[in-house]
Image 1 (cartoon, rainbow, N blue to C red):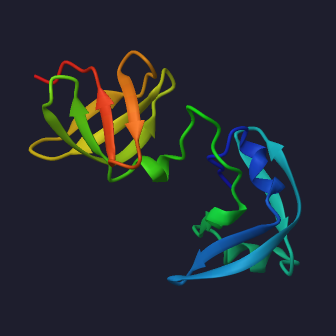
Image 2: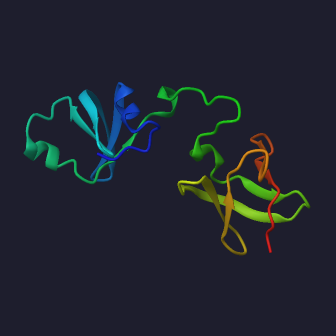
Length: 144
């Protein structure tokens, strides 16, 4: 499986997973797991052979929100940033966060609005403030 956790193998530390299979979410538990290169190899409770495992290929894996640790100060779960309004320091609205992507150098906010914008998520340089109460991310970004 491919994991987006940091580090990748941290996904096996969660006791309960939710698998999206045939359009519905089903709870499952990890029996064993380890990192194998860029992937994570896992054995799930009740999955005893390759045929059963093959049925899970392509399933999405999720962790219930209440099972996640609280984000540390200055850190954010990407899902919490999606939908927030992005406003430049001069007051110009740059759109709403559609999603984030990882580029290797830094994470990038992808906004949707009048046009799509890619804004590097660089704290204290580009990202000035994240205000969940107001639903706004303040940025210092050349938006032309």
